[in-house]
Amino acid sequence: MLILLLAVVGIAPAQVPEVGAVLDRYKAFRPGKDDLAMYQIDWASSLQEAQGRALREKRPVFLVIIHAQYGDLSSGHC
Image 1 (cartoon, helix red, strand yellow):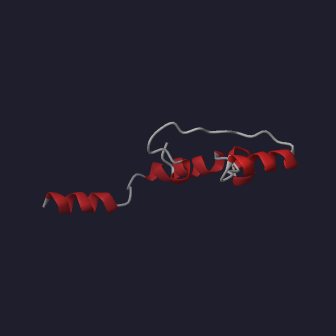
Image 2 (cartoon, rainbow, N blue to C red):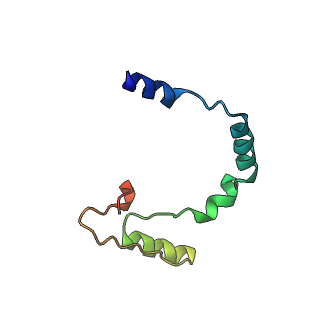
């Protein structure tokens, strides 16, 4: 019975009308994709590739070193 109740609560939409107003306000103020583009990191698969691109594009290399046994930025684990 508890599992059924939790399942229904988990899928039931919010009944509070203010939620829509808050979401609309959030969407109005949230920066657009073009505004956030400068925060995206253009990853390279190797240091050699990054250095070559940095030289061609006259940009610095942003080096991230993972010092953990299971660290893997490409999968989101660090």
